[in-house]
Image (tube, rainbow, N blue to C red; front, side, top):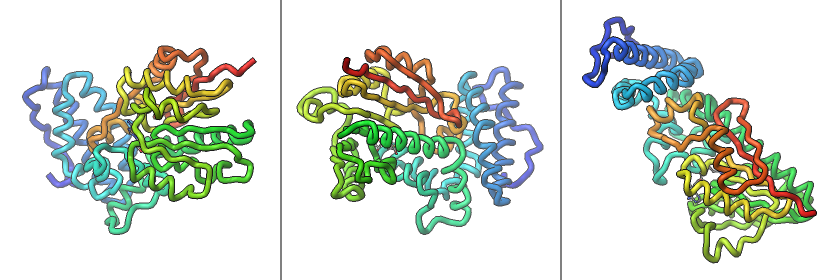
Length: 331
Ligand SMILES: C[S@@+](CC[C@H](N)C(=O)[O-])C[C@H]1O[C@@H](n2cnc3c(N)ncnc32)[C@H](O)[C@@H]1O
């Protein structure tokens, strides 16, 4: 079927559907939504198309998962012409192909931060990119960087020689334009990431500044010489990591990061939520599945890690939850 064709005939239910009538409804609704999104994309209304591929698609995906039809819905989406079409978008394509072994690497984050597609992107790919890097999780990632920058600036002005640790720093773009680059800053930033290419980029951008780059995985923080040698910090944060960590490792890491806080220090961890608007597109079109946590889960994780004081909050786009863990000031 052409992507622009009007779908009028009911489609046959897949064998796993019972009762068949409700299954046809889900399949029909999914295919009608994909057809309509495809029409809008072909007409140049990229944002309109991706509004449909946001909350409406995620709602159908929730219904499919909740009724045992996840595999069916994955197949409907994969077989739809829209699936191949959106691969012209470098953001979608990079998540799908995972050149560094996982979706959501620092290059993908830069796609969102810059809003600029690489050379060679088709016109249609540029249009899709303009939508995928802004709708749903894109705005949340931009908000997250601004929030981190504000916390960094707060640390710089409130501490004589503040020490800041970014865990899974990626390219640490939140440092750029922050007060870390100003003469006010007398402290040190430590940027830790397992990806050597990301570490190289941070070292290049911040050459000559008090930014120490540590090329290690977070498991190395849990014990051994690295754990002992990094010292303590006024601000520790981690964005874009907990979404990949199972509960046990997340709890152990959080406990360790809490120990690394100076008295009065602050730890901020971020996580995408289960009900985020971009979940359907990410999982069905980008093969990008995250470990999702809501506010209650982040609070429970923080308390299990030994936090005495925890604040949780969601971003304005309702895609990311934050847990702020505070260490008591010295008396
Ligand atoms: C989504 S990016 C986030 C980068 C940056 N924090 C930001 O907000 O733009 C995830 C980063 O986590 C890093 N990462 C993933 N697993 C890690 C691990 N086990 N130890 C250290 N870094 C890790 C990746 O290399 C990547 O740079």
